[in-house]
Amino acid sequence: MPQNTAGQRREPPPEGPIQRAAQGMMLLSTLLFVISALAVSSAILVYTAWRHDLKNGVFALIFAVMSAQIAINWLRWRKEEGEPG
Image 1 (cartoon, rainbow, N blue to C red):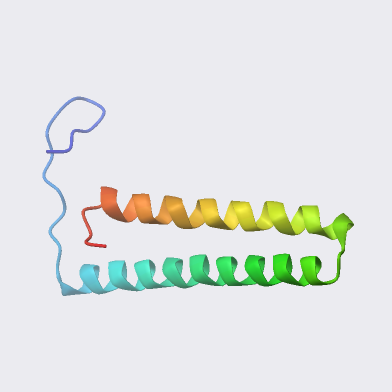
Image 2: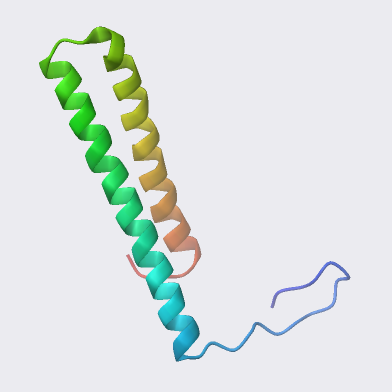
């Protein structure tokens, strides 16, 4: 059970259909953001490799790695929240 800063136990707020719908919308929006970041970073990486653009290729590689890290953190967050998947 969660505790506040004074060490007292507190009850979690009740979850109604509106709260579940809001959580679902937030989850969907973050998932779409993560997927779009992965798609854009992959496309930039492929484009710079195709053009043999080494100057911008380093940026594209860093962007792709960061996007992959975001996706991994999103999956970890989902598992911590107790959501299936």
